[in-house]
Image 1 (cartoon, rainbow, N blue to C red):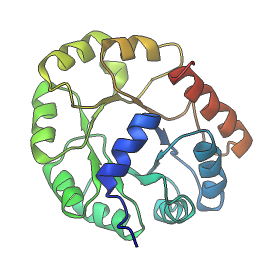
Image 2 (cartoon, one colour; image 1 turned 45 degrees about the vertical axis):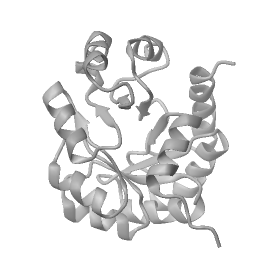
Image 3 (cartoon, rainbow, N blue to C red; image 1 turned 60 degrees about the vertical axis):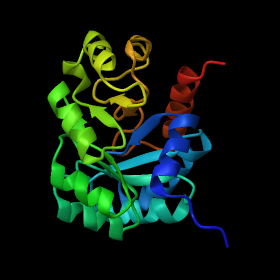
Length: 213
């Protein structure tokens, strides 16, 4: 029996295929699999359930079980204890609005992928030194494309920059041109109570926008 790919390997493959993280803030366990199916069928392989959603660990467990080829994880992860809870639920990706060395360290210890939030070069280099797999530039509303370009100039070219917050179809191109490698997509993809069919339409629209050909 072949050994399952590591979270890092699966993250790299998902980024290569479609570097968009689905942020399902507010999703409920009963609807998580249907929403996940809409995303996976549209080519999305990175799914985040923020921990301030209703019963988030149940949604993460359901998604991880239903879509073993996707990388499912949690957002708004603020403590090492929360990292352990996500791991126990089957999550493999930890996303945070901030950089916390303990959170990144525990994520790495458990073989998961860490995407901490950063806003400055100091935070970016500290997060990378701690073992971040990619940098969540948050909130993107406060990070103009010119700032992304400046960060890109001083960071290793292999470092992945993923702006999150306020990213829309009409401003994605300018961030990509500045050096963004992908994005976290929230309310323009999914809002609480949204039907799976609408999520499917949104997911397909975003996928086409990233790869217009």
